[in-house]
Image (cartoon, rainbow, N blue to C red; front, side, top):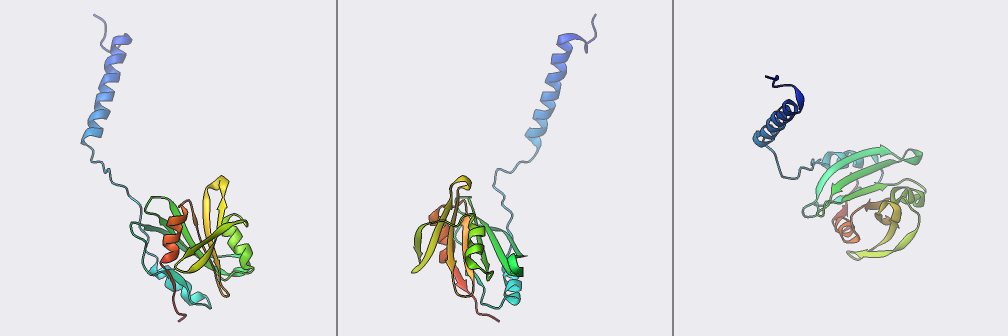
Length: 176
């Protein structure tokens, strides 16, 4: 009698035993079918940013419905200017980021954040005009608003309507 572990028959039995074991493991292991996007609270980052800049900081008064804030940071931009980044997973699970700085020249900052210096139009949000920019190869849309003391950029893979949702909830907080 041939040994059980030899030949094609033995190989097939060993493979079946391994696959059955893996299947059993997957069957009894708990699995979550829910989406998990890590939520990152940004209020302390915004407060810290407000203490380090000479103007009233812009921030969402509330997050748009079904959006998840998933990143935030303060970084040094060109010329040592502070830059605030607030990132989101949008309601349609695209990416959107709100960025602001008093970096000069403002046009260079906006172009760097939008990855393009070419406007493609304008968009009205709450009675305020935002400049639209689009970079085709990255599918990146951006809304840009240049104010006397700060430049605001909302950018990402989200569509224009979703970017406008974020623009609509922004408000300037008083300096202090």
